[in-house]
Image (cartoon, rainbow, N blue to C red; front, side):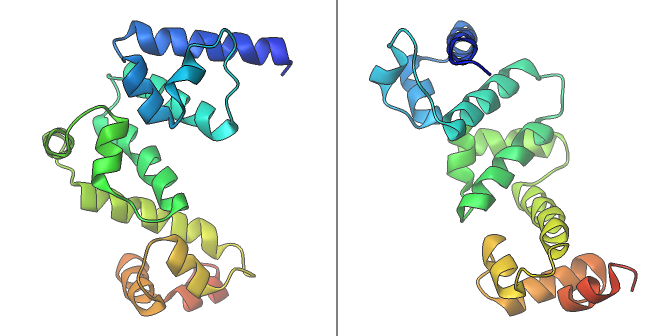
Length: 171
């Protein structure tokens, strides 16, 4: 994508987000960028900042989708950076933790349940890489130690992560 095209895209994204009622202060906080950067004629954003803007746009564009569908990628993104904090997810969605819990409950979902689903899905992806140590996978999924990951994985899949990896999930 050319520099001009990217600048136009960023300007359009910022314009849309602000048109749906997100204040510049909220946007700066959610996208993790200085507020002054938003007021520049052609703000330069990193790939991570663009991704956060896209998540904000998605949360505004897809109210017809279930709320949990909007929460899942936010959990996945936080999980990739370390610990998942419900307050941070709620902030990204411009709501309180209580409202987030309430909206999930309306869909018969819980935050803990979604977190577990995302962890399980990511575990299956990570286990495909046979060179990635199980300890590293456990850490990337936010488990305190390998044994906690192994117990959770056995609950999810009926076999240990090592067994799953060696059998290709056909145990």
